[in-house]
Image (cartoon, rainbow, N blue to C red; front, side):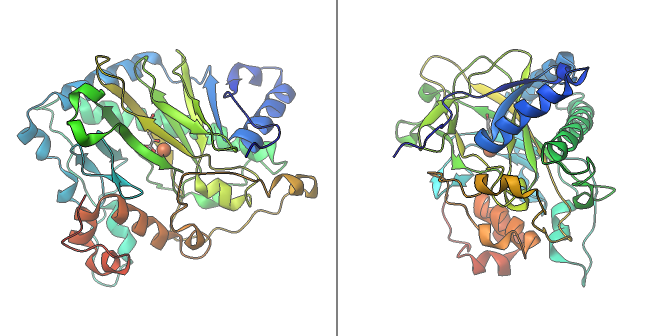
Amino acid sequence: MTVENDFDSLPIIDLELLNGKQELLLEQLQHALFHVGFFYVKNHGIPQELFDRATRLAIDFFDLPQEIKDKSDKIHSSSFLGYSKQGFETTRGRKDNREQFDLGNELNIEVKPGMPEYLGLYSPFPWPSDEDVFGFKDTFSELLDQYNILAHRLTRMIAQSLELPSDAFDQYFEPNQQNRSKVIKYPAVDELDENDGNQGVGPHKDIAGLLTLLYQANDLPGLQVQNHSGEWIDATPIPGTLVVNIATGLETLTSGLMPATTHRVLNPPPGMGPRYSIPFFLSVRLDKPFEVLDLPKKFDSLKSKVVISDSDGQFKDLFLNKLSLAMMYNRIRSHPDVGYKYYPKLAKEIGVDENTKF
Ligand SMILES: O=C(O)CCC(=O)C(=O)O
Ligand SMILES: [Fe+2]
């Protein structure tokens, strides 16, 4: 099926337009947000030097011997933050061929009996030590701060594009909000086992936060976005830009006016070497239920889009009423070993136990 006026490329939004051409910027943003859900931003304000430094440190980390990386394994923390070796994550029941380190600004919460279980997501996690990769934690903490500032600038613009006050989303952030980021390595196909296929990460929507920002660290293909007719469009890296995409949180709050667009990553073709990327996920507080925004009527006709998606929209129905549960289920499904170790009861509710295979 082909959807009318469907996108076949991704818009580029120049934040420089903020200086004097705000109306044009809002018009372009509305198109990108309402019809595509995925776009590039340029003149975003995060120094390239910081991304270069973070990328070098990420490569240094991934190049460490396995037993050193294993000291930071996710299995050591109930937060689902830390290192996952290749093949220890699944999307839609299939193994993803990627290695990654998930991180967040530290809250170091110790969960005591009687406290809500989801607070376990904010417990301490094992960073690589400075002896193993000097400056890893400091650099990624700096990047988290910069990403956070940019993400908040964007949420204010997004609120304006919905004709809402620019602080409309602030109610969904805690004063000490934990946001998450990660560094990912996707080996080229010839560096994988014969039967591994080329699923770097399978088709999915980013879960429950408001948006994702993404730095593609090298000039390699792989990231693809599914348009509304179900075709895959390449999100080819463009120097000096970041990719922005809507997560299910915004889709839910806007009743689908802003679609959380499905995307996937394919491992690089043989001989091309690994692809590295650094996404950032703007998260929301988990103790405040989402309430669908009261939007101008003129947007109503854009809400019920026909969208063909290979993502299975997991736990979508829970986002409105049981946000923290949806988040926990999602993490347990992605990392069943960690999920079963720290949250056995919740894990069993979604069919994950000690025998669940990757
Ligand atoms: O690595 C990428 O380019 C995208 C990663 C992604 O979609 C994710 O981790 O949610
Ligand atoms: Fe994603």
